[in-house]
Image 1: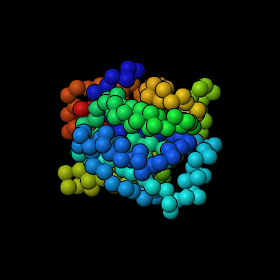
Image 2: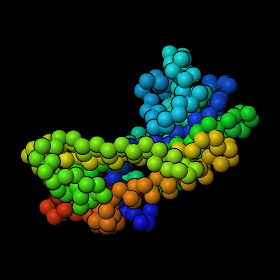
Image 3: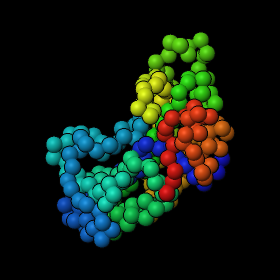
Length: 273
């Protein structure tokens, strides 16, 4: 499957760069603020508890333990885009890019331009900085009206005799690679209620949550590895969805009413910007 598709199924995306460490985080935060302010990012400090930092790595990083032990004193700085659809967060142990609005999603390369500027600014000052991990995580969703539609769009098998009694179904796959990049995949199907044209109907939400990461990256290879991880993650994504869903995602002129009537899809698909 070609990565060049017109529509997306995302509801959250995270890129995380872990390192040890920025010695003067206040000074660095000021430099990054000066870097991003002309591009109309707003700045604020944020509690570590409100930062989405999850990459499902079974081997805990040394820096994660430091964050836990200093959770009340670790300073975190957040740079929010003017339209508030994505942000960068830094502290002395990591940089995070997070996006959770995908109604007009651009290619990841667009967001990597500013991430590269941030990393270059940090590396230029912190000559001894060590990159301990680079990770990317994408959470996707699709809402369908009938459980039988799942097999039409996803390469999973749910026993037909379970259709009437199923409220939630989950599959978790940890460390699914034996190559340079490590991956984790969580598939979750849950029954619930949705509102369509002011009417409540039963529907199913299918979530496929994929993260990929690599450890010990050279400072000049960070953005290249993010791109490599993004390609690797798409391979996992492509293995999960069927050709039926792929064709829908390729459609340049989606009719959302037709999706409901003909394809039993009630939400989760956004048009790329």
